[in-house]
Amino acid sequence: QVQLVESGGGLVQAGGSARLSCAASERTFSSYAMGWFRQAAGKEREFVAAISRSGGMTTYADSVKGRFTISRDNAKNTVYLQMNSLKPEDTANYYCAAGRRTFFTRYPEEYDYWGQGTQVTVSS
Image (cartoon, rainbow, N blue to C red; front, side, top):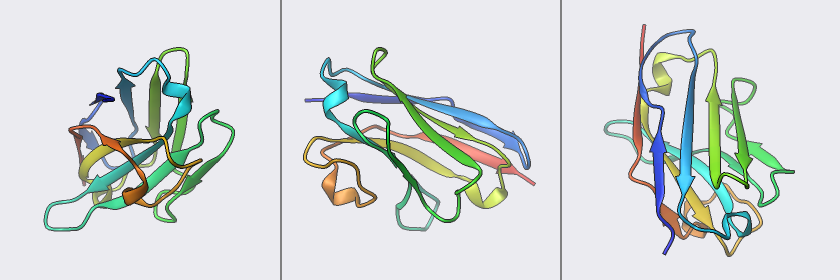
């Protein structure tokens, strides 16, 4: 069982930046593809970004491309989401996910473990 704990959320002004972290309990963290998803109030969960096991490949949702950057530090068992130029529509609960069955993917059903989420609120 992999435990994922997100941190770094909070209230940010539009145009500002925030950095989310997701710490994993698993010593074989490098065996897992990692992803970030978000869910706004009243909306379905949506893909944000994903990174391969080694960190060599990444993919992003069109809505965040050029503004968000996903990265990982396998020595620290942590994945990050750097969010710049934040917009009010980025307001959501952000979740990280770990998947062992996939190289890296934007599909939530291919992830095995999920964190509890961290709220990001962007004020206009």
